[in-house]
Length: 368
Image (cartoon, rainbow, N blue to C red; front, side, top):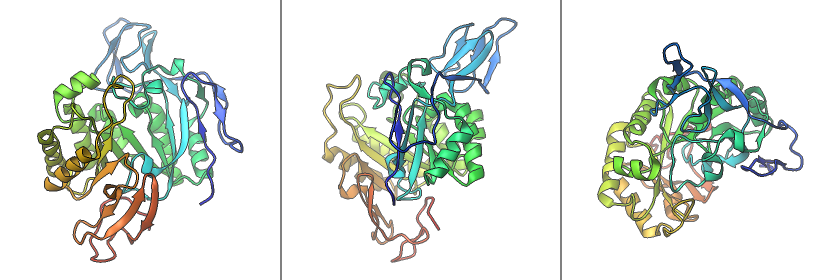
């Protein structure tokens, strides 16, 4: 597969376009787009956002907790529509998706903002600011889908920040991409209300949810969010026919308690499905948790073992390139179906979504 061109627009830095890339728009100010989910409060210009469980009530001129939605004269607007602050062509394995079209590329985009305040955020430079504070590029939905097709990307990924912030942009792009036969995938914190989620599910093919811990205490103290809506999102995605994978960033001393991990894995196996892949990812010091050590490999291995003991068929170790826990094994005969090192697929024996040795069907989205 030939070398891919890419672009990446970093927060508060000049726009940089790689040599040879000519399918994307010019640097621009964020485009405002009226929000789909809000209501006016009485006869005043106060509005209530209905997109996520925060239900921000905003007087005229106020911006929501996510920093990406603003009340302008009694109407709620999304601030980053068609104006991503980051775009990059990634292996789909980086999202991470291990059961979605391995060895293909995903055109990945983000607009600034987030409805969480995770102290360990890996992309805090763009997630913890407004679209008004980032360098952006004009990339409307049709142009984004065309760029993905031109670059031979099999999917578009809504990622890096929280895609709920740029919901309208994501939804319109997803509709356009679906018409071109391009998959729509997302990496999300899952903090979204059921109504907009169900509307989005009609066009989404796969979603990886960051299940950051398995206690309300953890979510409250480290994320300024809640666990219950995230669990509802995971179940809603699964029931809607969207392929689901889960990422759990393991932070020692915070969410690595073995009892909590086992409880989380049992919940996934029972409520969502034993075939749902769970990625136990290694934490590295970041943002406001720079004093915490990187997660030990042994801790990750214990978490993975707990997943198997709880009945999960696919439990992975992430951010440890070359570890055997990156590989996909047949849950029945243990044949290595996909061998990985980091984001690279070294070997794949999976045939039409089935184990070549015993014929066991493996859940996921596979090339035919």
